[in-house]
Length: 588
Ligand code: ASP
Image (cartoon, rainbow, N blue to C red; front, side, top):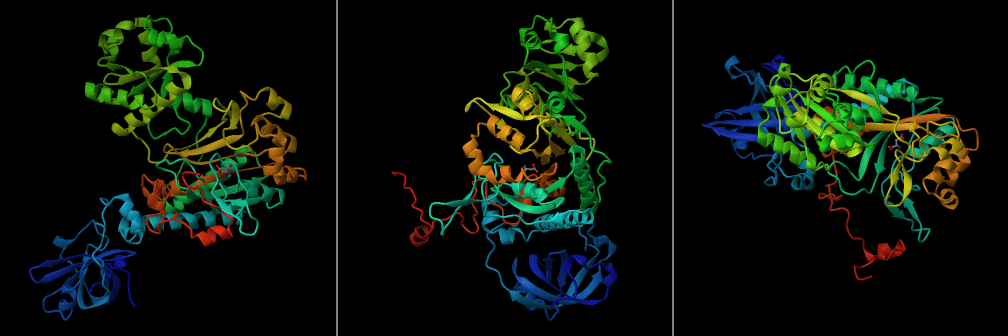
């Protein structure tokens, strides 16, 4: 039907007759001339219909989003009319035939970024026509292809694993599917392919990958989707470094292929402890050249109890953040940051503006300067490397809470002052605690998942040190987003049993839920480990989008619904009966 794509027509076609198909992005009548912006998957081109053209009457009838075929001659625009912001901005198509392929009802969207999310998702097929979304979907497709190419070239085989399966614990609720043939029994949709990929290693498959859909019924959070996509990988006979170098190679190849970006030759590594101490986050954003400083030793002797109290207490800290150029903040801005950290539980935020770094205490402007002596200030100044024109923020109190709110503050100040000094900052975070203690249920929970190996050699040693044990888990972080996580797995049955026990899973429950895994571990299971990347997040970062919903063709809303198809929806009684399901009413 067409000879070219709209977005691909350029000055080399000057004078040629071509035929294009697409949608009317915009139509303007300018004193007898009609301009049509014609859009297809490759881009937009300007079409001119002159008053004496045989196409004029047909062009007059066109409205936005009409689907058309246009034949015409490519004409180089005079240089003064070049539109540098358009790939096709040096030419236009002078139409001699306009053929209406299909009219459109008036469009219920503005077709701009102003459209609200509900209406965008309700009419997703129209929203996706926009150049921004067409580009996002292409990036995503390119990303998938780059992954397949790289992994196929590096000895990985692709496997599909079941969707109708048994629960895999990844920390969320399961989506369940009732069985018609087994009344009262249910499949769970996989929260990840975790156990199947481990079984594939036991099956001698050596290197597995899958671009896998995962399902997690989580409490609503703006950046989660009930179904999302992982690049899931698993390898046999590897340690942490083996998995990490395969993962780095993959990311480097994919970023080069899709964005022509060179990621560093080796990614920095921080332990979880270091990440929390220095960046107040288990996913530090290393684009910002700022870090937290522990200033406990300099303030432990001061009379200011807000500082000396935490400085002298176990499990507490005083953390300082140097904000380069922050002395320019107004009182109102500082109050804004105080309110910001209060969201993360901070009870206050102390600050010092350094007007003259060479003048000691005299050079400072701060409500707390009067509580400091030379010894304290000189120590703080030397440690933080503060300079004239900088500001120091201080947080004090519980170690984890203080680290966390100061970490949020670091990123916020970095964003506000546009301090990022690199575009892409990947890193590994390692040595996570094996367990977290859950006060409410008074038991350990797995920090990663229950199949992650601890950094101890025996089950006895783990039981004796459960509170402090570290795991062989790792996360990969890019620009402050956790883009993947994995671990070396437990490959010995007694260790797996010990971990289940520490997690409060009884022997009977372990047998009922994971009996197949415990059994498989008995037959010469190889040491193995792997990782899963959040593909939606990686695609969003690549596309420069804040929300993963903008790189998913048909996402759900934040309330886990699809406004387009109206799912989830009620089911006819006959179908419920067939599935042996009775729906509870509120009064039941
Ligand atoms: N299954 C894990 C997850 O979904 C990833 C892994 O350990 O490989 O987070």
